[in-house]
Length: 422
Image (cartoon, rainbow, N blue to C red; front, side, top):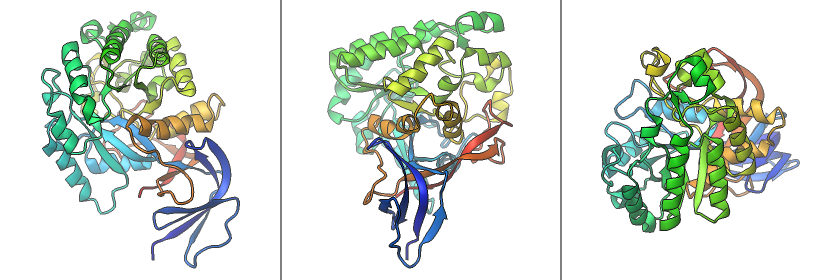
């Protein structure tokens, strides 16, 4: 007989109904069987769990992260990636196409699916972005129709596309395919060799800076192309105050766009780079204090639809170099929820529903997917979170193979206890 579980007096967060309440939740046969103030009619074999103080919400959804496999298995395998994601509360994860070989043809997508199928009980739904361009080189459009037939989640190179004429052709060609298109507006020539946001911090720390206009000028151009073509677009890696203003204005004009920012840009700003921790070398770089505040408010109000993890594993050898020489990126799948919860929910800057919405419902909507719902009769796609449990971030406590994070060795409060994925 399939196992049945009763979660007794758990705090339920349901972004779909914008509900926050305490109830008993009965789960059985992969379905949410009942949600009520008190459930007394139970099947014969049921595991009863006291969940006072725990949080139950829909499984989290990550819009974009990096897989080491295929090509860079020392950084991350599909097995370690899915385990890390599940440990962080994620039930859906979409990997970027910059593997080796890149996911620019159906064979690569089928490989990912076959590898995941070898796991007896995959802990989550792993999807992939199909590359926009051949070899993710930004020079020639990939066979988007073939990739769509291979059931990619959508199309993205996961890196800036510089050729606006090519971008226009892609948006025109992809429109009838009705798949999400994720683009990172970033002008590489303006960015130069910068590794920190250009400003007083870059001068004080003696590091080459990237101007905010490297993002905003590219964003303005992208918005104009979207306005002309009309194909919906998801804007990745929003990191500046001015970008927030441009996106808000574009949405007010009715442009078919959604947007996401990466979680570390909400927690930190360029002042943190003074530690010269290579794990703080990110792309785009951390913004200044005003950028950070604007992003935090934009997530709360919904101008920024979703929070992305952009989990980017690197080996110890990759990152143990000078700050400017380290490859950009940091891990995050297992750290996002506890850190954001402690920073924004426990301090009453956001409602608990604000955070859970930005990590679950809205990312699903950006992908054109049906969000999970905590209600009777719905598939049990859930995450159970203890916001009081403390643990230390160490290689042995992480499921990911990499440990490139500025929180390494730090104690965190809050941890996922269990996920359910139908």
